[in-house]
Length: 156
Image (cartoon, rainbow, N blue to C red; front, side, top):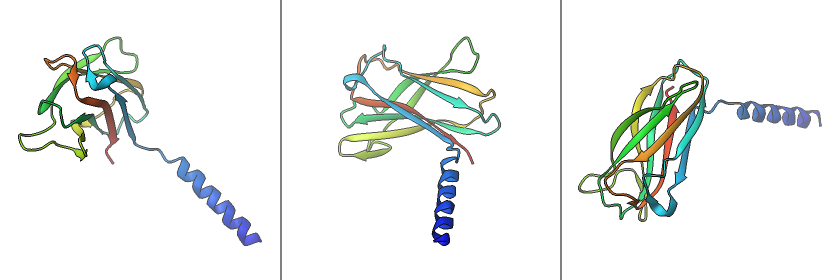
């Protein structure tokens, strides 16, 4: 009976310590209304950074159908840091395909692409950050885009 109690306490302690592990990843995606991304739909992604020493990889995540008409997508990425009064913007041309095939992972007629935007970002201030993502293609609304998101991975 004592062995069972000790084993139970050991398992509880193990599970408690596993629950406290800091997950060094942020990923969030939002659905694009009616799979037609208009200029007015600019999703925001809020996250907190406590580690101002480590480097992070930042990805844009795009999920689209195989009916999407272009090999690329132009995005306007905004970043607002803690205590900032303004947003810093950067335009990016993300390749989704070449002339032969779609990039990323595909299931049936749906493809998800993670495009590396920054291979080693450092967040200099601890606090809350907000990314915004707007499409700036010539076509408005842009059809066959299902989801848009941001992924941030801590580099170990």
